[in-house]
Length: 130
Image (cartoon, rainbow, N blue to C red; front, side, top):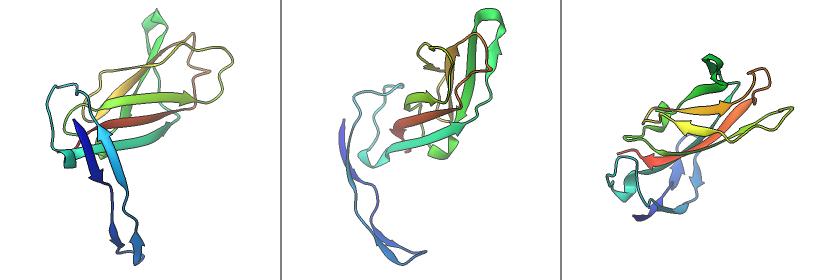
């Protein structure tokens, strides 16, 4: 699926200024649920989750936090890319995403303690909102 769509255009009613038109080329090779959606439903949503609440899974050394993406209005699980920022005194293995649906996703990491966990998560979700 290769989509070209318009992000925004027209007059901003609050400030009375012209809003430039931005064309975006969005290409979805596949989706989690295997369905297709109209090009005008393509959505890219991004955010930063500061100071997430980490949950430790017993003595396994794994921690996770759930990131809320309900305001993105996805109708199916989006493709999520995430990275973490902050100070860590030692190398941390890669993070991974699990249990994502149209309203949230979990970020998992293996670490010795939550005391030096990253300060936040920067993420981008790409999917469809209709």
